[in-house]
Length: 360
Image 1 (tube, rainbow, N blue to C red):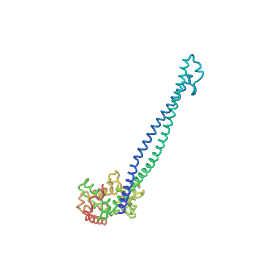
Image 2: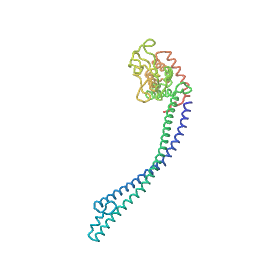
Image 3: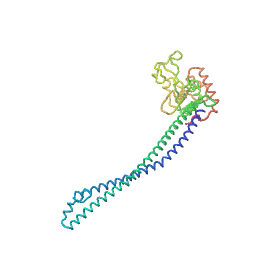
Image 4: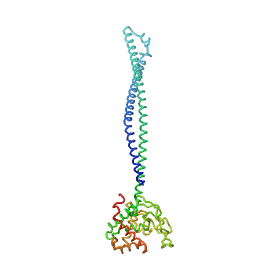
């Protein structure tokens, strides 16, 4: 099957892309650590450089205090300060203060300059190394992002192909019958539900299927398609019931179900007219909506209709009761004969059909 082959090809491509993505993400780890180490080093050196700047400020403050005190101006001692010495001992004291202040200033400035030169070069080298690490990481991260995008696209492609495969499978006839898998599931679900709700009725799924075959070829009339929830689209609509080829039934639903605001039309794969659907329509796929265009809803509503049309039940064994139910569905003996014949053909092949045509 082509859809299955395309899905397998896409799955192989995804596995290859996922392996590439894992390698690219793995390559990111050492580069991320390298960048982190480089950032940490720059931060520490910046902190050290900041300490050097703090030392410079402190040295300048000391020099200002000395200048304000009149001890030192620039880098030389003022002659006037020394000449004002009262005696040799005072001169010695003044000279010692000037010398100490000058040496303190020189020591602070020289130490600061050396620290700034050393730390400045190391910081410059660290920043360059950090830039290199950032560039390598960015390149690897871009590649990893690109690989992740490829994986995401392939995952979406696989999801689309899996959905297509499911749709193809759902629409494929179940050998040896001509019934699509999804419709076979809907018919069986309808019969099983009614057997639980009305045990005396015992409507066979083959009876519901016979009507589905007559009314719409199991939802395939005019190339209508199936959705996985059972919806049939485009809607299958009968002729306007304007009295020319049928009984005259003016519009009863304002065109909501059949799109015709003038006359009613039969709707959906089981061809319910809107007024009948209003009374009999029931939700068959548990989505909270009773829609005549849904295979599950239409099949369960058909089973319910047949059971109500033959209240004596035993539709699985009493052909007269079943004929009564079929006639109620369509007042035509020829229609009833055809439905009985089709049901019998499905009965004959029932044992050959798979137990669960559609996984749930």
